[in-house]
Image (tube, one colour):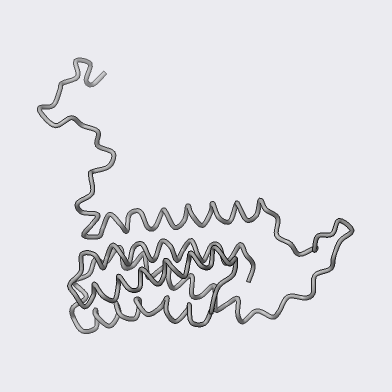
Length: 180
Protein backbone atom coordinates (compact mmCIF):
# COMPACT_ATOMS: atom_id res chain seq x y z
CA UNK A 1 0.00 0.00 0.00
CA UNK A 2 1.38 3.39 -0.92
CA UNK A 3 2.20 6.02 1.67
CA UNK A 4 -0.49 8.26 0.16
CA UNK A 5 -3.20 5.66 0.72
CA UNK A 6 -1.90 4.91 4.22
CA UNK A 7 -2.04 8.61 5.04
CA UNK A 8 -5.57 8.95 3.72
CA UNK A 9 -6.70 5.95 5.77
CA UNK A 10 -4.98 7.37 8.87
CA UNK A 11 -6.70 10.75 8.49
CA UNK A 12 -9.98 8.90 8.15
CA UNK A 13 -9.11 6.98 11.32
CA UNK A 14 -8.51 10.23 13.19
CA UNK A 15 -11.93 11.51 12.15
CA UNK A 16 -13.66 8.25 13.00
CA UNK A 17 -11.95 8.12 16.40
CA UNK A 18 -12.95 11.68 17.18
CA UNK A 19 -16.60 10.97 16.38
CA UNK A 20 -16.54 7.78 18.46
CA UNK A 21 -15.11 9.73 21.41
CA UNK A 22 -17.82 12.38 21.09
CA UNK A 23 -20.59 9.77 20.78
CA UNK A 24 -19.23 7.88 23.78
CA UNK A 25 -19.08 11.04 25.88
CA UNK A 26 -22.86 11.40 25.85
CA UNK A 27 -23.85 7.74 25.88
CA UNK A 28 -25.07 5.40 28.63
CA UNK A 29 -22.33 3.31 30.35
CA UNK A 30 -22.18 0.24 28.05
CA UNK A 31 -22.08 2.42 24.95
CA UNK A 32 -19.67 4.81 26.65
CA UNK A 33 -17.13 2.06 27.21
CA UNK A 34 -17.33 0.68 23.67
CA UNK A 35 -17.25 3.99 21.80
CA UNK A 36 -14.62 5.72 23.95
CA UNK A 37 -12.39 2.66 23.71
CA UNK A 38 -12.98 2.49 19.93
CA UNK A 39 -12.17 6.20 19.64
CA UNK A 40 -8.95 5.94 21.60
CA UNK A 41 -7.77 2.83 19.75
CA UNK A 42 -8.67 4.35 16.38
CA UNK A 43 -6.85 7.60 17.05
CA UNK A 44 -3.73 5.91 18.45
CA UNK A 45 -3.64 3.53 15.47
CA UNK A 46 -4.03 6.49 13.06
CA UNK A 47 -1.19 8.41 14.71
CA UNK A 48 1.08 5.35 14.56
CA UNK A 49 0.21 4.92 10.89
CA UNK A 50 1.10 8.54 10.18
CA UNK A 51 4.40 8.19 12.04
CA UNK A 52 5.38 4.87 10.44
CA UNK A 53 4.10 5.70 6.96
CA UNK A 54 2.35 2.36 6.57
CA UNK A 55 -0.71 0.61 7.91
CA UNK A 56 0.21 -1.44 10.95
CA UNK A 57 -1.41 -4.89 11.17
CA UNK A 58 -3.84 -4.27 8.28
CA UNK A 59 -6.13 -7.27 8.88
CA UNK A 60 -6.40 -6.50 12.58
CA UNK A 61 -7.06 -2.86 11.72
CA UNK A 62 -9.94 -3.83 9.43
CA UNK A 63 -11.54 -5.98 12.12
CA UNK A 64 -11.11 -3.38 14.87
CA UNK A 65 -12.44 -0.62 12.60
CA UNK A 66 -15.59 -2.60 11.86
CA UNK A 67 -16.31 -3.55 15.50
CA UNK A 68 -18.10 -0.27 16.39
CA UNK A 69 -20.19 -0.62 13.23
CA UNK A 70 -21.19 -4.15 14.26
CA UNK A 71 -21.90 -3.00 17.83
CA UNK A 72 -24.12 -0.19 16.53
CA UNK A 73 -25.96 -2.60 14.21
CA UNK A 74 -26.48 -5.04 17.10
CA UNK A 75 -27.84 -2.26 19.32
CA UNK A 76 -30.33 -1.33 16.59
CA UNK A 77 -31.35 -4.97 16.21
CA UNK A 78 -31.90 -5.23 19.97
CA UNK A 79 -34.02 -2.08 19.98
CA UNK A 80 -31.69 0.15 21.97
CA UNK A 81 -30.15 1.92 18.99
CA UNK A 82 -32.37 4.94 19.66
CA UNK A 83 -30.10 5.87 22.56
CA UNK A 84 -27.35 6.70 20.07
CA UNK A 85 -27.23 9.58 17.58
CA UNK A 86 -27.93 8.42 14.04
CA UNK A 87 -26.02 11.03 12.02
CA UNK A 88 -22.69 10.88 13.83
CA UNK A 89 -22.60 7.10 13.88
CA UNK A 90 -23.59 6.94 10.21
CA UNK A 91 -20.68 9.25 9.34
CA UNK A 92 -18.22 7.31 11.52
CA UNK A 93 -19.48 4.01 10.11
CA UNK A 94 -19.09 5.26 6.53
CA UNK A 95 -15.52 6.37 7.20
CA UNK A 96 -14.72 3.10 8.99
CA UNK A 97 -16.18 0.86 6.29
CA UNK A 98 -14.41 2.78 3.53
CA UNK A 99 -11.09 2.68 5.41
CA UNK A 100 -11.38 -1.04 6.10
CA UNK A 101 -12.37 -1.67 2.49
CA UNK A 102 -9.38 0.25 1.14
CA UNK A 103 -6.99 -1.60 3.43
CA UNK A 104 -8.44 -5.03 2.61
CA UNK A 105 -8.50 -4.23 -1.11
CA UNK A 106 -4.84 -3.24 -1.00
CA UNK A 107 -4.00 -6.60 0.61
CA UNK A 108 -5.61 -8.45 -2.29
CA UNK A 109 -3.68 -6.56 -4.97
CA UNK A 110 -0.70 -8.41 -6.41
CA UNK A 111 2.70 -7.32 -5.19
CA UNK A 112 4.24 -4.43 -7.09
CA UNK A 113 7.12 -5.30 -9.44
CA UNK A 114 10.61 -4.33 -8.39
CA UNK A 115 11.38 -0.69 -8.90
CA UNK A 116 14.27 0.27 -11.11
CA UNK A 117 16.77 2.90 -10.08
CA UNK A 118 17.10 5.88 -12.39
CA UNK A 119 20.31 7.74 -13.17
CA UNK A 120 19.41 10.35 -10.55
CA UNK A 121 19.46 7.71 -7.83
CA UNK A 122 15.73 7.70 -7.19
CA UNK A 123 13.45 4.81 -7.85
CA UNK A 124 11.02 5.18 -10.70
CA UNK A 125 8.09 4.20 -8.49
CA UNK A 126 8.66 6.80 -5.75
CA UNK A 127 5.73 8.98 -4.95
CA UNK A 128 6.12 12.64 -5.68
CA UNK A 129 5.95 14.93 -2.62
CA UNK A 130 3.19 17.02 -4.21
CA UNK A 131 1.06 13.90 -4.58
CA UNK A 132 1.49 13.23 -0.89
CA UNK A 133 0.54 16.80 0.00
CA UNK A 134 -2.45 16.63 -2.35
CA UNK A 135 -3.68 13.34 -0.94
CA UNK A 136 -3.24 14.63 2.61
CA UNK A 137 -5.17 17.82 1.83
CA UNK A 138 -7.92 15.95 -0.02
CA UNK A 139 -8.37 13.39 2.74
CA UNK A 140 -8.41 16.11 5.39
CA UNK A 141 -11.07 18.05 3.47
CA UNK A 142 -13.27 14.98 2.94
CA UNK A 143 -12.96 13.85 6.55
CA UNK A 144 -13.62 17.37 7.83
CA UNK A 145 -16.71 17.62 5.63
CA UNK A 146 -18.10 14.44 7.23
CA UNK A 147 -16.81 14.77 10.78
CA UNK A 148 -17.70 18.42 11.48
CA UNK A 149 -21.47 17.97 11.05
CA UNK A 150 -21.23 14.59 12.79
CA UNK A 151 -19.65 16.20 15.85
CA UNK A 152 -22.40 18.80 15.98
CA UNK A 153 -24.94 15.98 16.19
CA UNK A 154 -23.41 14.48 19.33
CA UNK A 155 -24.31 15.29 22.91
CA UNK A 156 -21.12 17.33 23.26
CA UNK A 157 -21.93 19.18 20.04
CA UNK A 158 -25.33 20.21 21.37
CA UNK A 159 -23.61 22.37 23.98
CA UNK A 160 -21.13 24.02 21.62
CA UNK A 161 -21.38 27.74 21.03
CA UNK A 162 -23.61 28.42 18.03
CA UNK A 163 -21.10 29.00 15.27
CA UNK A 164 -21.82 31.62 12.67
CA UNK A 165 -23.85 33.76 15.03
CA UNK A 166 -21.89 36.73 16.20
CA UNK A 167 -24.87 38.54 17.63
CA UNK A 168 -24.64 40.61 20.75
CA UNK A 169 -27.16 39.41 23.32
CA UNK A 170 -29.97 41.87 23.85
CA UNK A 171 -32.61 43.59 21.77
CA UNK A 172 -32.19 43.56 18.01
CA UNK A 173 -30.97 46.79 16.43
CA UNK A 174 -33.05 47.83 13.44
CA UNK A 175 -31.21 48.72 10.28
CA UNK A 176 -32.41 52.04 8.95
CA UNK A 177 -31.76 50.89 5.38
CA UNK A 178 -33.47 47.51 5.64
CA UNK A 179 -34.95 46.27 2.38
CA UNK A 180 -32.84 48.42 0.04
